[in-house]
Amino acid sequence: MDTLIGVVLRNKGGVADGRRSILQTVAPETTVMEAVRKMSDANVGCVLVTDGGCVAGILTERDVLHGVAKQGMELAAMAVRDVMNPNPHLAHPELTVQEALAQCTDLRIRHLPVVDQNRLLGLLSIGDLVYHVVRDKQRKLNDMVEYMYGRQIRL
Image 1: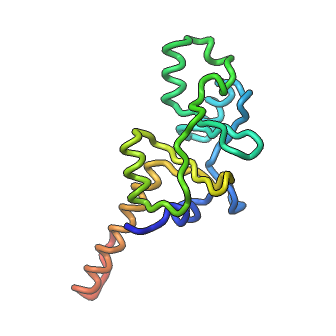
Image 2: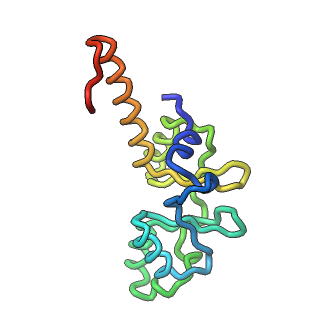
């Protein structure tokens, strides 16, 4: 599949398109509790930590879980900067969906911030990428059935 993740991000709705986005960001000094509430309210698995418009890190559900195991309930009052992954894997919008899926699998990550020239364009999850692959396969199957039988099937 040669589709670029920049295209998938545009179809999903990113930061720059002006639509309401599910991308959630926090500042490094935000408390973990505030970040967790934001994640819970938006029903998302991570928040990007931004500083001056640039990605400074990522805080995921997994980071919070490990933090609770190590810090206990004191974690809630800690600053996100003390718990986040300060070096998230960043993806360029020219990466293909297949390459992005391979990176997620190899790195065992579920979230890919998409950045171009240090500008945050948005965030793709492994679920977004899999959804795109499935929809593409459904379209191809439908095209084949229509070609063979002269009608579309409902998927």
